[in-house]
Amino acid sequence: EAAVTQSPRNKVTVTGGNVTLSCRQTNSHNYMYWYRQDTGHGLRLIHYSYGAGNLQIGDVPDGYKATRTTQEDFFLLLELASPSQTSLYFCASSDRDWGGEQYFGPGTRLTVL
Amino acid sequence: AQKVTQTQTSISVMEKTTVTMDCVYETQDSSYFLFWYKQTASGEIVFLIRQDSYKKENATVGHYSLNFQKPKSSIGLIITATQIEDSAVYFCAMREGIASSSFSKLVFGQGTSLSVVP
Figure 1 (cartoon, rainbow over the protein chains, first blue to last red):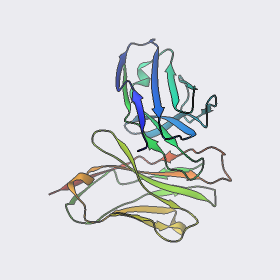
Figure 2: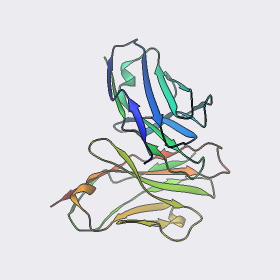
Figure 3: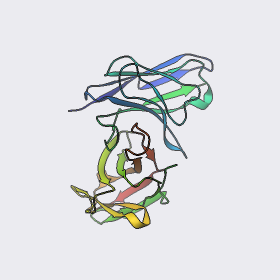
Figure 4: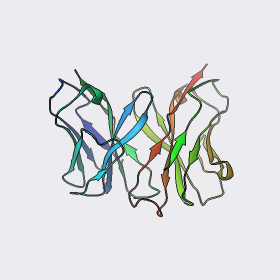
């Protein structure tokens, strides 16, 4: 069965700290995405990628970097974490560009103190 | 720019009844794709069903079906014979077609919280 995994599942850091969120998919999908979910805003796209080495900017990219090292692995980097980045982060993958449904990981809850 | 709106914040229904959740969307594209996702209490987000804009037939998967009204830019999710386990938050999402951006980018609505009570 297709799977998207994320680590860590929970993370607490302090303002100014560095955080890396990891995502791995075993779906053999080319497309991967990072979202954040906040009350009142729903799911918002941070960055996405259509293959190793490729990166595209989403709708709320400020304060985030991303890197796609392989087809399976997609990382989200917060280099100077701020309290406004406290959120629930989801990774997703899709096998097609347009028209393909996305499959989500279990989420990472990040708290920035 | 595309936009997806779910006006129902929360709905409560009795078990074994039918519920409809509303979603309206805005797009300039003539070809697009509509999706419904379910987020459970544990936070898991699961794909439920999709509708391609060029298809006239309403999609159906299990006890989920769609009411696609293209002239009204509306895509309602219908759940029949609801069960307690259907209690969750349901998100509508849209992806514009190939004439738009070349990368798959979903825009989500705010979500509707469904509570199914015995």
